[in-house]
Amino acid sequence: MAGISIRIHEGSGPTVIYLPGLHGDWGLIGAFRRALGPRVRFVEFAYAKDEVTLEALAEAVHAELTKAGVTSGWLLAQSFGSQVGWALIERGFRADGVVLAGGFVKHPWPWGALFFRAVLSSPSWLIGPAYRGYTAVCNALARRGPEEARELMAFAENRGPAEWRATAWRLVLIARADPRGAARAFRSPVHYLGGRLDPLVPWPMVTGWLARECPGYKGRTIFPAADHNVLGSAPRESAARVLAWLGA
Image (cartoon, rainbow, N blue to C red; front, side, top):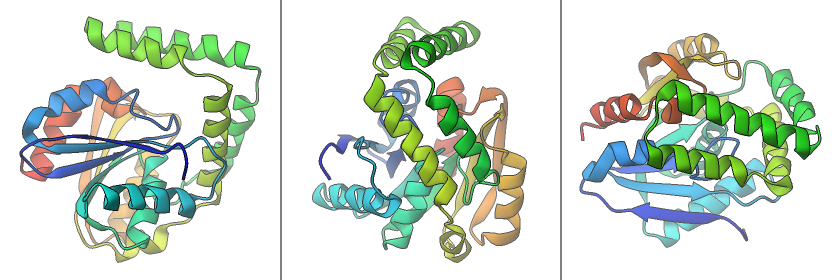
């Protein structure tokens, strides 16, 4: 698939494959990746902006992993990335385990995804400033260092019409997807990482379903001061927990 990108940061430990959320790229993962350090081999993706099926997107990710010689690893599936991750597992990728970072199986509120899609249909002159304001507030609350603040503001400034359209399409994919069969059959470890302040994914419902239905589910960690983007709002805490889960 044209437009999909892969980037690999070599390290001495397990392979971690980062599947980004609705934003679709590695623009929000820098602080978390640096907190992991060289203790893992970190593979990250930027999705194409085409309106393709979830299966086609997973196939493209699988093809890039195969081309790079990555045949197994832990899936770090952020929000929408969880849907890519389950589709990747359904395609036969050998996942050593899954970390759902604000992720889910079938979203408990698919109508909510369609509601947010309608919000994203607002003019870009309205959405862009709102997103930049949110980013500025996050920076202030988290007391981020200069490098992290620069990365986040650059990310916000680079959200153009193509990015908003791609985000809206991914919300449609969330509403349509139902990977419960893949989760019920998955026996390798599954961990949930989230922020308490999450209006997008009702994590008590997600983790309750996992506890009942997913044989590999090992439990959850919820950081009280973090939000839906837990890898960005609590990068050091999240990295420490992921490294512990991986034994790295």
